[in-house]
Image (cartoon, rainbow, N blue to C red):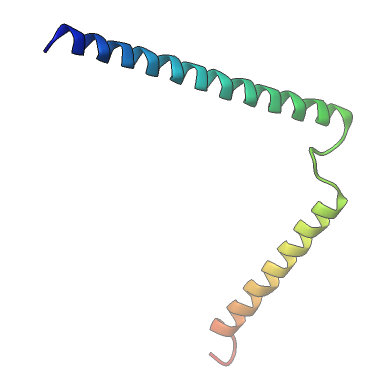
Length: 81
C-alpha cells in the first residue's frame, strides 16, 4: 500500500472518530437537559406536558381496549362456542 493511501485512511478514521464523539456528546447534552426539565416539573408538582384531557383520553382508550378484549374473549370462548 502506498503511504498516501494509508494517510488518507488514517485521516478518514480520525474524522469519523471526531464525528462520533461530537454526536454522542450532543445526545448526552440533550438527555441531560430533558432530565433536568422533568425533575424541575416534578418539583413544581406538575406532570410533564400532560394535562387532565390527556389522562382522561388514556383512561378512555384503556377502557375501550378492555371492552374489546372482553368481547373477543366471549366471542371465542363464550357459551355459544
